[in-house]
Length: 233
Image 1 (cartoon, rainbow, N blue to C red):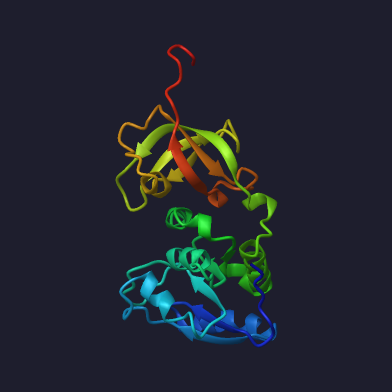
Image 2 (image 1 turned 90 degrees about the horizontal axis):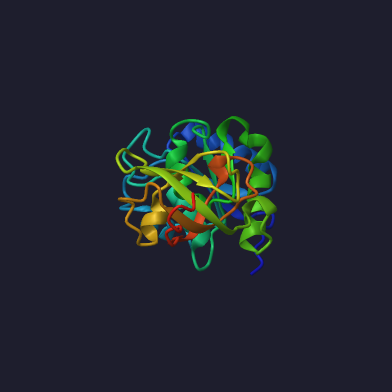
């Protein structure tokens, strides 16, 4: 499926700060796109309802991650962007965030499979159009090397079920065998695996092991690996 954004395509910028939304619109308009902005998300029950309101009018979406800074929102930008890109008829979407290198990264990682590009708000003006092109390429089947997945064992060292962003501390063998990372529990739970008692066990999953940073990793088709033979380790 080939996707393109032609000059004059309609792009929605979603940001709870109207001034930030206006700043993001400028480089998109300079590139020849038409833009609109939304900053109030309180009337939408969930991310799915928000996306349904966009399908007929817009060709792409640029969405801030935190949408509840100035009013109520029951969803994050990461959820919106991931679901937009994974729809049967995708709405190409890019996530922008000022929380790329903060604790809020945890709320982005759990949706990372559907987010080809995350743009730091501090430098979006130079990269936002490139990020849209990168996303459209992936949705069209031209997946970049750092986004391609392959099967790898994952060793579970610890599980943190409490807190806002439940995660497991793991070693992704096919990525960096000497480095531990925090894997969101969402793909584990989505696979129907009970995280209780996972410490010391092994998983298998398809992971984009050519990713440069741990924050870019995502996990699909997670399964519980058979127990290792006694005395193997």
